[in-house]
Image (cartoon, protein in one colour):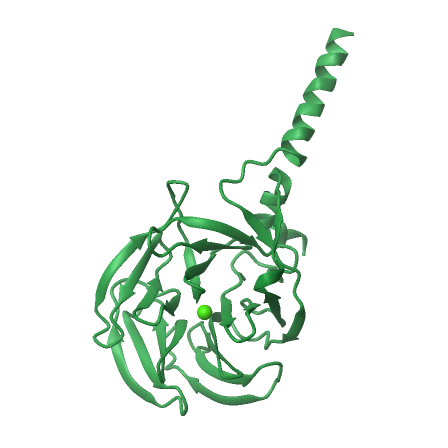
Length: 273
Ligand SMILES: [Ca+2]
């Protein structure tokens, strides 16, 4: 009898730990997309930006890297510019009347005219290039580590860096970036979640869990497209080889409590899709 009770207690404890216990370090939010727009699933998305009704998208892979402009919700490509085959395109950002684009391992970035996509200049980067955004003053770059690197938009020289941490633990694998209302959003490679970073302290303030609509079917097909539409208070989210762009409204976030099962699903849910 005692043995039966012990077994029962064990099962109840395990079920509690898996499905009810939550040990989140910071608040976690989910959004239900309010709109689903077309996305070219051939694009190995590495960066997404919004400006004046247009979406600017940078894609990766050697031989398939480009910078592309489309109208929101339309399949028509308004402008595109291919990178030389030796370059693997990475993050992009729009600063004033220019588009900046990183490359992954070539130590190089490109600057294009916002309106014509004509190449205006090139610049050097140290180490790998991953995500790129700007806060209106400086460019902000990620390289897959726990660091955000700030660059002067004119000289393209580093002006400082920030260590990002989640309750004191380094937050590695920072990827595509977007500056939204004073915070830096960064998706995490190989995970269906975005961390929201306070750029003054490097602290992760909260997490956005994307597993309720993510199209990630392979480990690396993460949500590498994050673009903020300030006029509408919406964010466009897509990923590498996703077939849709999901529109979320920032005022429609809902706080969730994740158990061990749902936390595991944000990392490994792609195996079930
Ligand atoms: Ca972005």
